[in-house]
Image 1 (cartoon, rainbow, N blue to C red):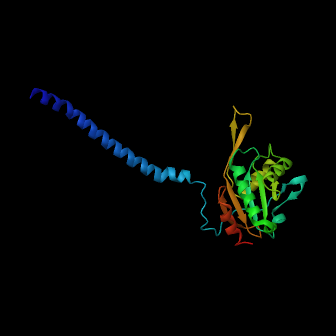
Image 2 (tube, rainbow, N blue to C red):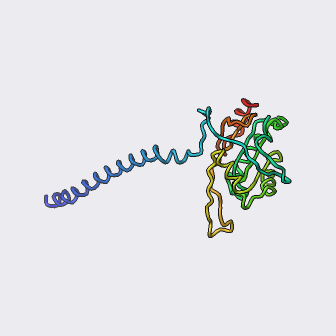
Image 3 (tube, rainbow, N blue to C red):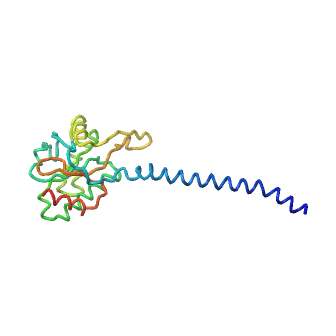
Length: 216
């Protein structure tokens, strides 16, 4: 009898603590699920682009930049054909090569019809990427991708016109010294240089071609 009473007294605080712990765990699980729904899911999908509500969007504008051999380009240089335009920098380790690979796949899939569109890569790092190195970098992915560069102010203007986020981030412990944090959208302009839609850098080529067919 005394032994049973001893264990009963010992188990009571344990049971109470266990119940309290379970309640706290349930609350934490619910909190995490809500946090995941309202925050993490949006954070993870911040670069996913929907193609709805495309009307009346102010993206794009004229520019003056340089390409291979110092050739001058502006928006009028690309009118008459749909324009695919992507922003990045030559020392970008992953996003830019991925985006340019997608554009290259679009051009390869189109074959001879690729002559019906223009594809452009604009550097966001004019301090390191002059027009020669930018043109060379772009052509590594496809000979028809035109690489453009310019002065810092010229790049700032076109980035603002296309609503491209960019920020110089110092890397004191890296040989690169700094990197460029930037948004990673592929823009599609119509034959008149007007904004039509945009895609995330990892959109499948078939999806881009599907939209291209509507503006050819």
